Image (cartoon, rainbow, N blue to C red; front, side, top):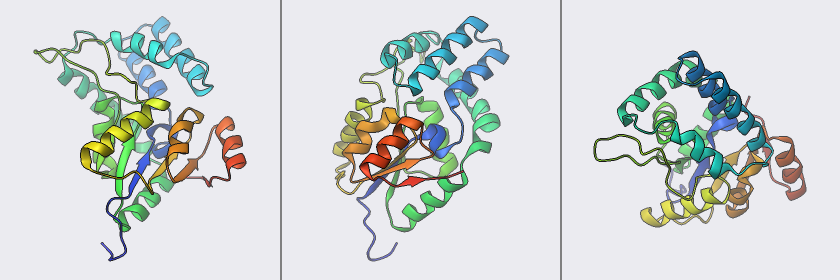
Length: 224
C-alpha cells in the first residue's frame, strides 16, 4: 500500500450488468426453470417483473417479496448449494474485463471494495470470493431456528433508496466515512446512490441512466 493511499475510501460496485455482463436474476430464473423448480408461469412472471424493473415501472419490494416467498421452508444450506452451482456455471464466465481492471486500480490505492447489490446474500458471498472483494451489502433472508427460510426479506430492500440506507448503516457499523466514496452501476434505479457518493461512475448504462449521466457530467465507462 502506498503512503498516499486512503484505506477509509470505499468503492461500491453493483453486480448485474456492472461487474458481470448478465442480469443474473433472469439467468437464475431460467436455471430454476430447467431444473424443474419453477413453472413456466412463474418464469414468465419473473421475466416480466425484471423488464419492468429496468424501466423503474414496478413496486419492487412487493414483487421481490412474492418471489422470495417461493423459497419458504427451504433450508438455507440447500439454497447456498443451488446458488453455488448456478454461479460457477453461469456467472463466473461473465465477469467483465473492465471490472477486473477497475478493481485492481482501487486495490492498488488501498480502497475498500464493497459489493452493493439487490441480489441474494448467497450470490453476494460467491461474488466477493470470485473477485476478492472486502465485503458485501445485499438483501438478507431471515431463517427460523432450524435454518429454514421464512419466505421474506429484511427491509428496507437493498434497492433504490434502500441501497443508500444500507450503505450508510454498513459505514456506521465499521466506522467508515462515506466521503470520497465511489459507486459503479449500470442502472437508473441506482440514481439515489449515485447522487450520494462523491465519485459516481456509470458502466455500460441503460438508456435512462446514460441520459442522466450526460446531463450530470458523470463519467461513462465501457467494461465489456
